[in-house]
Length: 268
Image 1: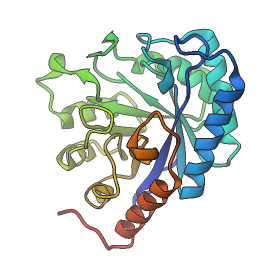
Image 2: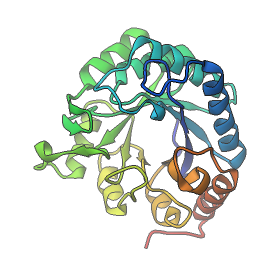
Image 3: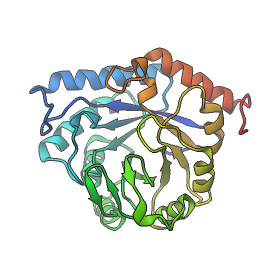
């Protein structure tokens, strides 16, 4: 997916129900695929430019990997979502970045969102090593035209080990290691992303994407500073990530972003 420098793309999250291999797996792929298609259709009809498929229902997550059956199920889901004709990305939690690349190649996705691309950190699941060297070698070997969107000091993680690096330095490290875009978040799912962090990340010279906390209220402050916003929680019914996508919320956010692009909004 190519992010335009003069427009903020809206990337809607497709949170998958529990997949095979996870504790919550329900035993049949039919309902999983239907839920993925339902949310994807609502996101596209509301005006999303792209979709990001994530195995959010697989709580609690494994550290740095998923099982083969999870990979197979994710590929089916991504393929179903891709049929709607929008660019699609893949994220497999937690930090199952190599598996996500494989799903993207098999299912025709155009980007992967990657945790711990450059610099290690401690996440909910434990210690995660940086993966840039292995991941980009795998992408090269596969001949894959799949972008890497790298999280910088991502949410749900402790970054004390890199406390001597501010966010701007961490962003430059990810750019140095070969990321195609940078994702900047708040501290947790749904938490606001600081405009100052976006400005710091932009100095690395790559497209910057907001990765958490976007609503129709804060879009005017964030959109002028980013080439894209990834939104999941706020687009769901009553702002609950466990519920289906609310088409009215998607339309409201699309309108808020379009107003900024047309010049009705500007950074404070």
